[in-house]
Length: 67
Image (tube, one colour):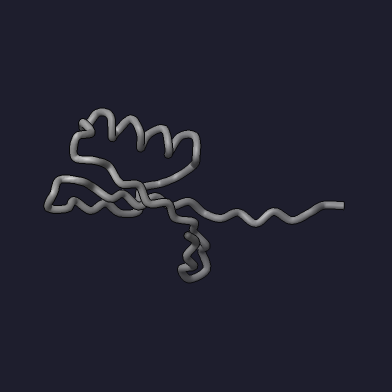
């Protein structure tokens, strides 16, 4: 899913974390996404059942061809 905000263009990724996932495991998973995929945390939401939704975003980089 891609969303445009003002002059910045971001690409979003939504992850659902099960309630059975421990905090250290969730932290490790999000750290790996941030480190290797260049994602940053945009939003988190905790639901009544205990699961979480996490929105990650990263800037969309336009690459111009050089000939």
